[in-house]
Length: 322
Image (tube, rainbow, N blue to C red; front, side, top):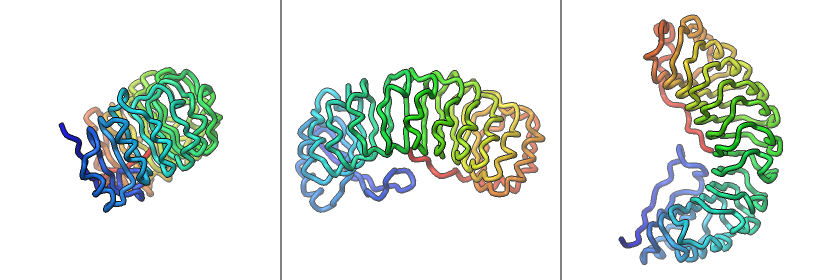
């Protein structure tokens, strides 16, 4: 199949950094007509799929600010990235090690997303504000210190605790995927944390320790099926956005009542116990703007009629952008 490209209009609701504008998606090589298109469009955002090193080299003469490279592990020389000094956002498919790149030569790089075998070379990315990484480490101690980092998304099956998280004490957003976590002890080491996402943690049985992040404004818990006690959430007085999906058999909703600043609440795929008395208290949450109950099939005595003033608020909350 011949090389081709397409232009995707920017979606400000979903895309991060919408100010960078539209994106060009290049597939399987450099189409002959692409040079004219780039000269006319001024686009600085690119996505490469099944391309080779030649495409990266030809792209390096343009002011690239956002680049995604996928499906090219065995056919590409990433050294051409070092000729893109304007690069701000970089997504890489699976790479063996970041030491193949001299990240110090990308002084404007603020966002990096990658699957990596070794973390060698990551310490050179001192300008990073956001890091999304899939790797295999057993402790946050194995990661280099990145003092500017504000958002961290970590997918590592070997992690089982937050030990060592203090080296990222400037974090305002933390997204944890899989791992052997059983609690959240150590969260007090990141006192500025405002958003926390927990996903696919099959051993997480308690939220003990979550009160160590009193500044938390957004909490998203998904597919943690051993978790059934949500009462520690009541210790988050600043919480505005709460999303719960696919948890254990939650027996009480009383954790909601102290959350006087709650604006967005969604609950999906949760086995709700007898929460009649708890649910009536939602009427006191006067700041609530969005309320979504996607599945109430397991409710025993849910006083849904008492919530009619709130049921109209069924639009989904804003998209989280990590």
